[in-house]
Amino acid sequence: MPKRSKLEMLADIISVIQKKNGKAKPTHILYGANLSYTTMKECLSLLLQKNLIKKVKEGNRTYYVATRKGYEFLNEFRRLKKFTEAFGVSFD
Image (cartoon, rainbow, N blue to C red; front, side):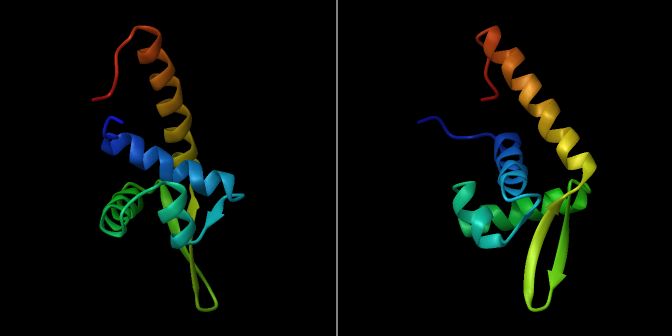
């Protein structure tokens, strides 16, 4: 199986959050996006820096929530992926 690009991993994280009704725990992201702990931390940090997700504390639990900008990123990524696949081009 080909290695995923960083963009694909970022989109996968936002997709997991979306599937969890807009709010996901780190563990759900780790398994749902099929990432190593280190890679997940790097990707979450980048997504937070770019304001594509927000970190939310509820009691002693941490959740990640996708922002509107994050959902726009995900939609555009999916659109671009479909477009490139139609022409036989990939993100590699």
